[in-house]
View: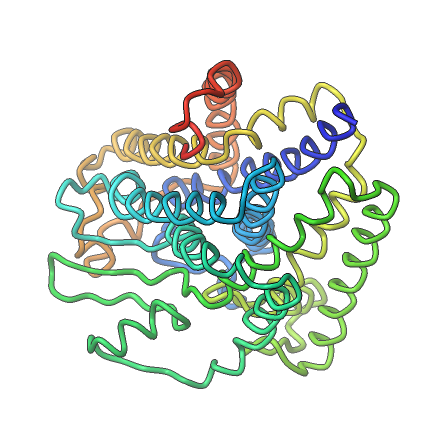
Length: 395
C-alpha cells in the first residue's frame, strides 16, 4: 500500500513539474522576447504560429497549478488530519500566499522597492481561493462539488457586466471577474490579472478531485475516471467551441489560412479563464494523469523534483527571468534600470522595441531550467530530511 501511495503522489508531482517547466518559458519570453510586455502573442493580426503556440502551450500552467492546489489540500487532510486542522492550514497558508504575492513575488516581477506596480496573479488567486476553501470544506462534498461547477461553468454569464473607474465597487468587480489594469497616478498601478471567481471554483473542483487519490480508492477505477473525465472535458470544449454556443466571449472564425483558423479556434480567454479555456486545459491534464500514472524513468524523476517544490520554483525562477532580462538590456547597450517596472512602466512603453527573437527565448529558458534543477533538488532534499519543521509546509 505504501508503494502504491507513493506512485499516486508521484503522478501528480509529475504533472505539476511539467507545467512548472512550461510556465518558465512564458516568463522568460516576457523578459527576453521582443516587445513582449506591449504586444499580445495571441493577436491573430500580428502573431506567427510559432509565437502563438509558444504562448498557448503555457495556458495549461495556471489552471493545472490552481486545480492541483485544491487536490493537495484534500490529500493534506487525508493524512489523518481533522477538517478543522485542514481549514486552519488553508486559512493561514492562504493569507501567507497573499502576502507573498503582494511583496516577494511583486518585487520579483518589478524590482521596484516602492512596490508601486501591484500585479495580482496566480499566487494571489491561490491565496484568496485557499482562504475561502478553508470555510467551504466544512460543507458536504456534493455541495462543494456544486459550488465548483457553478463558479467554473456559470461565471461566463457575467461577461456582459463591464465597469470602469476606481470606485470601491469597480475595484471589487475587477478583483472578482473583470481583468483590468488600474493606473491611479504615475507612481501607482494595480493589475487585476487573475479575477477570482473561476479560480475559486477551479480550486474547489480540485479539492473534490483529490478523493480519487485517497489511499482507499481503487487504482483501476481511478484510471477509468481520469479517462472519461478527460474525454468529457475535451469533447465539451470541441462541441461548445465549434458552434460558439457558450463559455467563451471571443468566438472563433475562418481566417486567412487553415493554420490561422486553427489558432482562432484555440484562442480562448484566460483573463478571467473562460469555461472553454478551462475545459481546453484541464481535460488534457486528466489524460496526462491517466497515461503517466505508472511511468517512471530518469526524465520523469527529474521533472518530479520540480513538482515537489512548486512554490520554491515559482518564486526563484521569476527572479532569474528578470535578471536575464536585465542582462539582455546591458547586452543591447541600454539602461539596465529600464527593467525596474514602476507604476508608470506600462504607460511609457520604454521597452516596446526591446527584446530578442524566439530562438534566444528558448535558449534562455533551457538555461533557466538547468540552473533551477540543482536548486530544486537541494530544497527537496532539505524538505524531505526536515519533515518535523512545520514552517516548511508553507513553502
